[in-house]
Length: 273
Image (cartoon, rainbow, N blue to C red; front, side, top):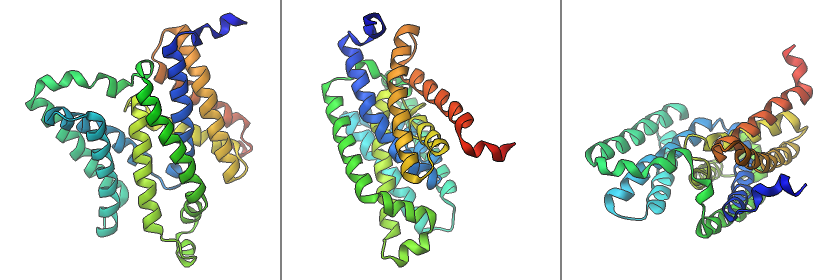
């Protein structure tokens, strides 16, 4: 039996598991809102802003953690601002800012080609090199996400279901949508450290989608999303040890496996027959 847990003996695997157990439930909890508000493309745009945030940080000689966070939150705020002040759809605005963000990063790197070497971990994640400082940040984000959900969950649920009714009850919908956008941006940018910008959107969407298949209510969906995120983190990291594969990508594959299992178990499957 002990041999089954040999993968947990190295300290870097213990830190990697702790990181996943902090960031994946936070992503899963927010993922329900991301699906309800159709923000999947938004989270993808935010994750890709990491590329430009790192480039700006390296160019200016400042800590790339701060440049990435500030640039990502700026993109999130711009999306909400432009959505309210223009006639374009949210997807169109995100598409414009997504294109501008990635293009700016490519221009910076093409001008200063020596900066290109700093992007590997951003693309693929570097879960097994996470240090104590990263864990502190993830723990802080985890606790604040719990607080955010306690305060915002019912309000955001009502806004997603019936925005006019939410406004009639005194809920400032634009403020709560902006807060959601900013917090999704924060969690995505922290999650990039674990699984990379190519995979972090899956950390938001897949467990939440699985929770929707299994849950019979909004709270049930939230419970299942977090449960799937935790189990995917544990079994995915273990599988990556035995397969000698990318930790973040293996975690995502395990969560996708749970998603397809949920399709078979979901009572809603009958409507597809």
